Amino acid sequence: MLNWFGKARARLEAAEQEAEGLRAELAARDHRLAELEAMLAEARSSQDESATDLQMATGLYRNFHYFGDSMAQLQSSLSSLAENLAKEKRWP
Image (tube, rainbow, N blue to C red; front, side, top):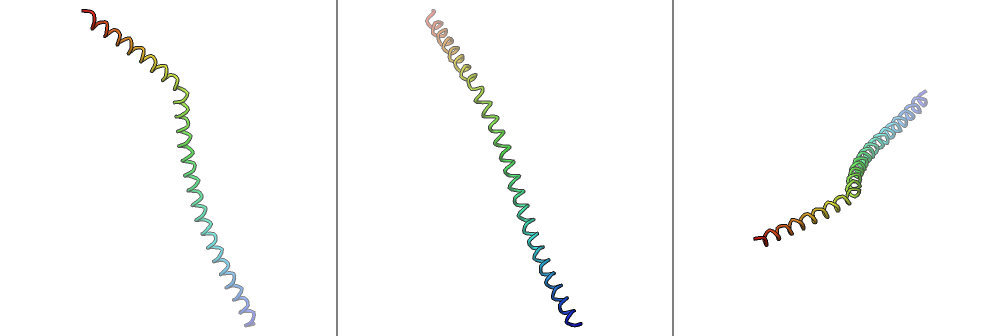
């Protein structure tokens, strides 16, 4: 009978040690999961920023020819203004 209690106690201690090991493994996995979730959130945030930057750059690139046209018109206007000022200066 004492032998039976001794074996039961040994099995119980082994089961408790195994349970403690499993708890430690679970805690380590929970910690790793939290790290991975934080990394995923950071990657998603970075992706959102990149998508926003891409949209802005695409919009600028798409409308860049308008800027060129506007600059050409500005240069033409400044040239006309300079010619008019030169004519007025010579007038009297």
